[in-house]
Image (cartoon, rainbow over all chains, first blue to last red; front, side):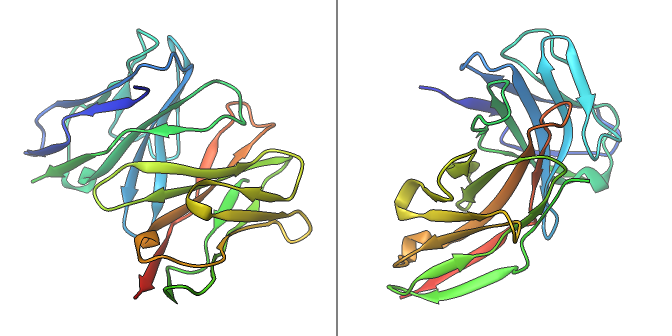
Length: 113
Length: 115
């Protein structure tokens, strides 16, 4: 089954404790991206990657890092999480061309206390 | 700069009535337009998209959307609403000519269908 898999789905952590949210897709997609969803703000892009070893900042990259060492994986790293990073996070992927449908993971609820 | 606006935070419709969820966009080139739906505790699911061709696009679950270039709109419609259509709906635009085909999402519209 074609899918985008995120882990963990739910996490409560403390300020400053590094964490990684993994994302994996099995569709051989070139494009992958991370979004955060906050009430009234819709989805805001954090980082995206057009292919292996190619990453770029989205609209809200501060406090986040990503890597794309393999085509299927695109982990999101919070080096020193802060409470304002409490949010619902989505990973997404699509084939490289602009007209293609974007597929989303089920989301990761992150709470930083 | 690219932008997408969903002017209504919430739309309330009686079951069986037609529904419209509004979306307007602004891009520098030709737009690729999408609608996604989000059910509680789930990721976003693709409904339909406009790339080129017929301005009326049909999608999943009986939804359709009309692309209007002069009004820069892409409103989502359904002739007869179901209670199960209650969800959060997002409009998105992808700029064909941007360097990374960046995707911009609207803020979302919560659709509530009453029995």
